[in-house]
Image 1 (spheres, rainbow, N blue to C red):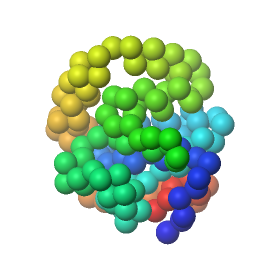
Image 2: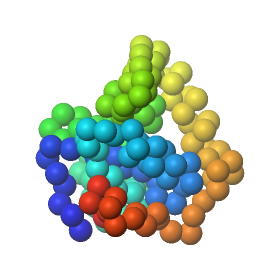
Image 3: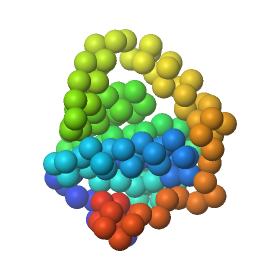
Length: 138
């Protein structure tokens, strides 16, 4: 298991969700400054990072962004904070942070609650290619 880098933002995601896998692939493609590292919520390190923040791993159905030494973000806040560091104009999505979190998370929860039905589910977590493996903590 790779150690947690102190100079990288960590994205925890549902490793068996096709939508989440696609989102991670999208982030990797647009992370031109190599800011992020990734771990599935189902992995040993993912469970450890969740536990360290006092979150219930059984209640997690969202993406989590951890900024070491700063904070962690969940749901729509995590997605919008991630967008800040993406290339190609996606950083403009951060402007949605002005909207009330309850409204943003309502939309997020609707998608999250239907993600397996709409996008499917894998039997196991994604296995990254050798060149991407260094970006994953598990």
